[in-house]
Image 1 (cartoon, rainbow, N blue to C red):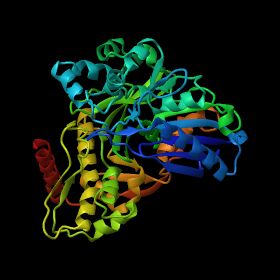
Image 2: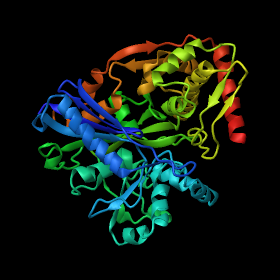
Image 3: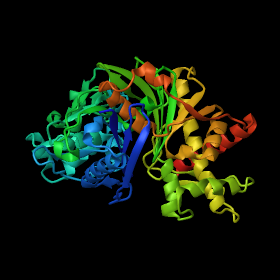
Image 4: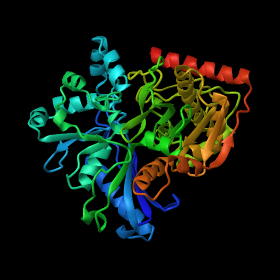
Amino acid sequence: MNHILAIDQGTTSSRAIIFDQDMKLVATAQEEFTQHFPKSGWVEHDPADLWSTTAGTCRSAIERAGLTAEQIAAIGITNQRETTLVWDKTTGEPVYNAIVWQDRRTSDYCRELRDAGHEAMFTERTGLLLDPYFSGTKLRWILENVEGARARAEAGELLFGTVDSFLIWKMTGGAAHVTDATNAARTLLYDIRKGRWSTSICDMLGIPMGMLPEVKNCSDDFGMCRADLFGKPLPILGVAGDQQAATVGQACFQPGMMKSTYGTGCFALLNTGETPVASKNRMLTTIAYQFDGKPTYALEGSIFIAGAVVQWLRDGIKIIREAGETQPLAEKADTGQNVIMVPAFTGLGAPYWNADCRGAIFGLTRGTGPEEFARAALESVGYQTRDLLEAMKDDWGGDGKDVLRVDGGMTASDWAMQFLSDIIGAQVDRPEVLETTALGAAWLAGWRAGLYPDMEGFAQNWALEHRFEPNMDDPTRDAKYAGWKRAVAATMAV
């Protein structure tokens, strides 16, 4: 029993990764699933797809590693956050599709709450803003709009959970209805200072508290999975939302350390230690991780569209066939053209929090082609990251370390990472293990199982693969960023 099975259930695919006793990747399996867009701004997943792809990739990874369940010590889970599910507590049958974190259908309701003066109370207790991004208003929408859902919820027949809770419920055969503190902190229902669900917020949103899962530490006993899944019962010992798992996987355990993950969206976290820092710049105050009942807090900035902008180049306007073509195109772009893309396909996240604006492209000429589009797409991620880092450093007091640890699919592009270093004017470190989200989940479970070292030992194992140093002069950097800010202002003005 010297291997860990890490589940990484993401926005566009489910993955399973096997790590050995040295935290080395042994095998992986991945399966994409369908995205559903029933209306403009609505994004849904079929819960059956989330479950079937998770179970299937776990079996595939174990098989590819040449292992049996007897050799798996524990399971760690990391997941897309905020995505909201409601299911029957007896049958496990969902009452509606999963409403994805990107979904904007509750924008009007969030605006009503803000206009009524409630945002300060939500922010003080949850660290979050009143935005459709979070789970609470999505849950309310299901209760209000799915026939019979509210009556069934009030009768104690329905359960709510984020993706981790749903998967654990399925894996344990309904024996465990649990979550961890990092996922709870993203629901808009959890008091991150008191460490419990907020009765007053649930009352305001009309959420029966009996629907809510038990909140545990990130390394904890989350239950035993059914014997029929993999051949024997396996303990689930680690859970964290994907961005917090990446923070752990990057060993950002010291206050002031920063990481940024580039997946479908981009998420930057700054460790602020034992004290939650209230943001002046509409950053989120959240829980980075929690052990032994003691939370460590972080400031977080969320970009809705990062890797998804490359998917749009591929699937939307079809100028590339695969993501790897983006860098060669960007390298060939005409440097005399200043094309700026604001990828607000589902609104803008931090620090703007504008749910209603939509994407725009500026600076087009007759000579603009796929090369310039590719460069503008990659640059948009760098610009948005600078927005986040400037806001977080201002909140933190400007004392954050001038090093950004990065991970996620987009970091494979040297061009994109060099531009990121140039535009933020700071060192960008890419680790040897790019699977930091899965590694974080694996370590949480492996540490609990007694297989992996403690925090200090884990941090010492972090290894650098490539360091990017800024080589753009200050006038160029400032001029390019000023152009980005003008483009964002124009986008929000429409």
